[in-house]
Length: 172
Ligand code: IMP
Ligand code: MG
Image 1 (cartoon, rainbow, N blue to C red):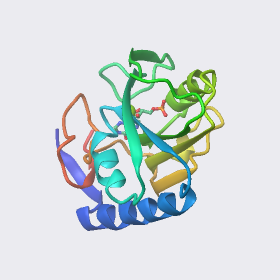
Image 2 (image 1 turned 90 degrees about the horizontal axis):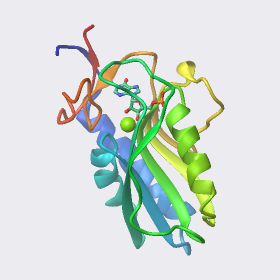
Image 3 (image 1 turned 120 degrees about the vertical axis):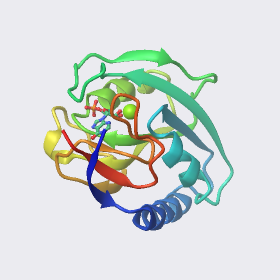
Image 4 (image 1 turned 90 degrees about the vertical axis):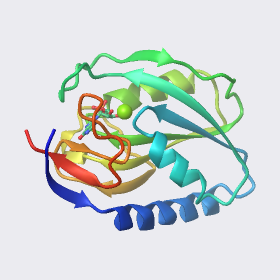
């Protein structure tokens, strides 16, 4: 895998994550915040983000799959790992790496709403709004990008590139 261009640097990521953390801190003061991290891509973003949220919170993990080993969505979402705990009555913030077609999160939102949380919001690090196939508007978004396939900061191309500290475009 080759990177053709770095579109978001490590410094830019750090600055934006701090801003998101500050905003979430303000919005969830006096609420019990429960963060759901979508594996594997959002793990690095979530780890940085929760340290910028100056509130007590809980975390849990879910693993979904909408992609095979390719860069195109299949539209089919499978749940590979569910939450350990119940979320009824809790203020849920779903943390995702990137929203592309929106199919994954739209499935997840339906799935979680059935469990009757007190509230449900979505925080994504990256968003590619031009690719959307269903209506899905993240409540918090780090950075909007063009229709590039990117890796780094948790995002992968066939499981490679997650460890990169920046967001780079994959040379196809
Ligand atoms: P959606 O269901 O099309 O919104 O797909 C969301 C998922 O696709 C994300 O959680 C990523 O795992 C993956 N994805 C979409 N675009 C990219 C990309 O540019 N790089 C890496 N993964 C991506
Ligand atoms: Mg993902």
